[in-house]
Image (cartoon, rainbow over all chains, first blue to last red; front, side, top):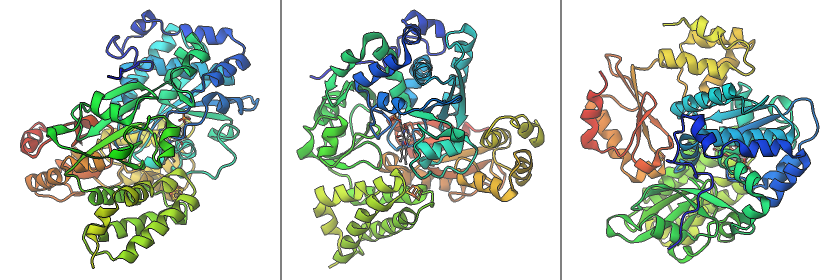
Length: 406
Length: 148
Ligand SMILES: Cc1cc2nc3c(=O)[nH]c(=O)nc-3n(C[C@H](O)[C@H](O)[C@H](O)COP(=O)(O)O)c2cc1C
Ligand code: SF4
Ligand code: FES
């Protein structure tokens, strides 16, 4: 049986998250000390060499992102703890178990890009995490470990789109959270138009180990093109609904049947949606795929946030996709037409199919609309929204056909 | 209870602090009274229309008056398949109100929400932001009784 490998959750349940002494005792803040003894370019080179790719969904090489940041008097490090993707609870788990690790990771990034101000954007639905983080920051500040690096926590307001990095920046600035046009990318012009690195919680949380043990060590774990571990959060009809941290060459089948303990109530597997609510639906025949981002993309799915929603044989795919369409209709920020109108129409057609009132022509329209949205929407929300529709049309076509009015 | 003005003033010097100020007001008052939004507009130097635009963009903030206990039912896909619909119906029946409404005594408001990040224990509700996981309809009366 495949085994867990813990990097970001190494200290989970081993230390008291509310005591910085415990974290230091476990070796915490040694990496920051080491990073600060390194030249900034060497530190960035080491992170690049680790091939650590962003854990927030897009999977961009973290060291590469940092290397694009130009010289400027003021720069920012922003941590994305918006975690709005349904089925995902990994960032909350990481922070609740070991908040100092995140602070250390952010300070390492601060040294790399020469910034002394960090922000953590935490979703409003996690007020108890905000409190924990503020206590952790106070402790870190009074014990002096962060040096001149400051960290402030800001709360989100229940808008999924604010997880998108430029919408998040707008929100920290006190505006409506509508995505900006890119370029310029935040690395060049972000928060208050200053160079800004935005990374996910899990990305930052990997940094202390990469600094201590070296980029080559990290690069050798899991799948070479997307190395390291990934925290996955299991939910739905699986026996163990738990967070796990596994090397990225672990297969979906191992995740569900070894770690997840299989399907609840002795039922059969029907589908799994990975990566959150915008992720693709995956049928039984593709379960031997490794979870790394590239392998997932090759089967038309995503790794995304690492949410794993398991559905048993009794589940109604059409009803679930209809519910997901409502999510996107509700969360579209309305800035661009293909998404504002497209999510509305997609939900309208899905409702019609779900009620058994759709004709074959409706399916064609839905497929066309979906393809247009993936190309024409301004941000990732609208581009990814049709994913569940397109992948279920492909893998569960019979369920759509059975619902049509003839 | 701190006045709305005092709360908002304390965020005055924080760049982009209007959303933090809104959260602070809502923590005390459970919603954003109209005068809070208008006052925030003045303090942060934007128009009232812009201040309302910010307040209404965020579903976690409410410009409508709400009850003492805000019950939010998650209806995202994982909670949906775990029976969110039946749970919502049970709350509606027990409280005698529909989603989006507040009981006549001003005690309970019932709302829908998307995922609150507790999907290890679907279906999930929150009461004044604290999560209650693995809910089933039989537990609804007991959970309501906790709200004194
Ligand atoms: C609609 C939308 C929602 C997103 N939500 C999140 C989120 O909750 N957390 C996150 O880290 N990244 C989220 N992202 C990705 C961010 O835009 C960005 O790529 C990420 O924070 C970069 O960090 P990383 O490279 O470390 O992953 C979202 C993107 C989109 C388009
Ligand atoms: S794609 Fe949707 S969420 Fe993104 S900018 Fe356009 S309307 Fe807003
Ligand atoms: S889906 Fe309901 S809490 Fe995440």
